[in-house]
Image 1 (cartoon, one colour):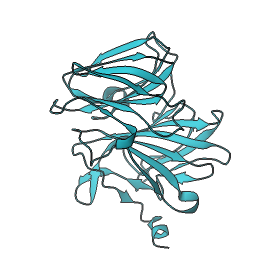
Image 2 (cartoon, helix red, strand yellow):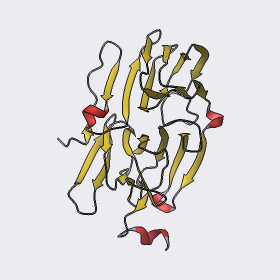
Image 3 (tube, one colour):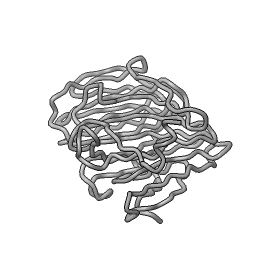
Length: 266
């Protein structure tokens, strides 16, 4: 199997099914975990030298961070529903969560110094937009975009309708060449509706030294260390993915594959 495709594991005692670290991914910045918690189950983590954005994929939980009690957040029954709730926890702090219902959470991390306060990111603070036309239409929820406060993390949810393409035309962000392009590692956490489906994702560079096409099942993570990375949702299956990005500068500036950029002008 490709090293870029990470399958979920059996849950550990804390319900963790994904544990992607910079060391396991072979890169520098992005960390990503997913937990499935039963009602009443609690989880607490120290952030260390990394900031964290805890996204409520489904369910409801009582949360705290950096010594503050933020009460209950969440409520949607699946990530395909709108209105995500999230918790931001700075570096050199702790965050905690107690599930009030069965819930699924994603823990997105990146290097930071701990300059910012902990906070809840409410649904009304999440920018929502529709991008593309025709079968390139997709729906974006900007949980932690570069216009919102964080030190390294960029976090976004995307819903790609059945038969549509996303991250398309193919783009990349693997060179520290601002203002033209930024260097950002990226993870895609894929979910399918219905869950028996799959998504197709290609990760490739201009010189094709990296060129892989992956079939991502429900619950898989695709690593994008570099290169272009378009993704398609086959007919009959709606695709959700959660993106986490981080790099040396907190700027999302991408470069389109020139072979396919023509469609933006047509």
